[in-house]
Each structure stands twice: as structure tokens, then as C-alpha cells.
Image (cartoon, rainbow, N blue to C red; front, side, top):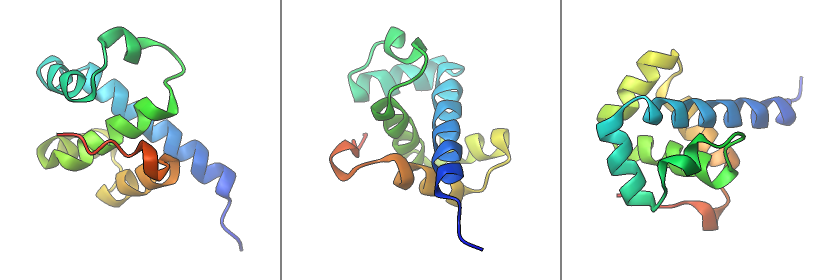
Length: 99
């Protein structure tokens, strides 16, 4: 059976949207994320989130291990799923290298 790439893309974007929501629910972490990415809160509250915002949120979680672990516990997704979602929706030039 061949992998369903359309489903993988939808699942990746869904996980990215959940990452944005997770950050929105954590004001101290959100403030650092917004500062690091150069976004305003209003940018993230628009729906649907832009691909660039999804990439940034996933990458931010990947860089901040403590947040990543909390996110995976909250979503029930394995760590690898976050990385794979980031990789699936990020084009090389969109990878933000968050701080």
C-alpha cells in the first residue's frame, strides 16, 4: 500500500495549527515566540494560519525541548510526528531557525 501524501499534508498542517494554538494558550512562551519570530498576536489569531506561521510554530517547539515535551503530552503525538510535520510543510527557505 502506498502512503497517502494528501492525508500526510493535512495531518501535518493540523499539527501545525495545534502548535499555534498551544503557543497561544501559554502567554509567557507566546511572548518569547512572537518576539523571536517577529509576529504580533493578531498574526496568529487569523484563520487559517499561514504556512509560514505553522512552520515557525513547529520549529519553535522543536528547538525548545521542554515545550516540545509538553506539546506531545497534550496532543498525544510522538516527538517524531512534530518533526515530520515540520519537514512536510516547510520549504528550506521557510525554516526560521528560531531562537
